[in-house]
Length: 341
Ligand SMILES: [Zn+2]
Image (cartoon, rainbow, N blue to C red):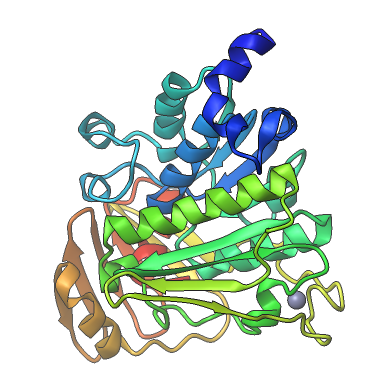
């Protein structure tokens, strides 16, 4: 596309003083990784494609399910019927929104073994995932490669976001230990309003745009909001001088296989996920949180859950049998969504 046509397409954005022609050129040259193409990632990727970001790498391990359509922009009933991988489905819609954006959909699970490779060539990354295991890995990979990234999370009517940039606090400064499975709010336990997820996705895209054009107004604080209860807040955050990741450079998750091991169960249409290390789950508390999401039964030995798009049995040691999961990615996606990783 010639420059004249390029600039007329983005005329309103170029007119905006914070972007201008120079900013638009920077957007065209930018390479952005989006990890998780769900409620946040579909919104953020659409904003960035429409804004004229030149290259988007879209990473997601999951497939489109009917229960995603309420909040995951871009996806259609056809995508759910065909169970299309989210990264590929999103790329096919984005390609029709902006043919100038190079799209690189990858239906993979970001793990310790591939995180640095997935960041290769990227200027920044957006965390649009639903679990802290992936965020901790992304944090290590980004700190190690000095790549800025934007944390995002939303559940219920609330959400939060923060820019993690070299020299500032990293995620481990704020959250020293990986939260236990099931210990934090998730879309499965709290539900999700699509307005809350859209707001956080748009906030992340807006901070990404500021990073790319080099805006001095880039936020250095932790943003949280609760749309339902009318709360918007900013919190100061400082680097922890004892942080193992950004202060001491200890990358304990990079280069390692997943913390969870996974295997197909012979003769059954199911996958078994086994967490590494010592895990003790409070099944009664988890069952209480999942009551609104499907049918839950709990005994002293196991919890069984059946809901839209997921059925599993969960044991007190964290082991889970995921029914109908086609492969490891699908099994891990169910576990992350309903139990937490
Ligand atoms: Zn840190």
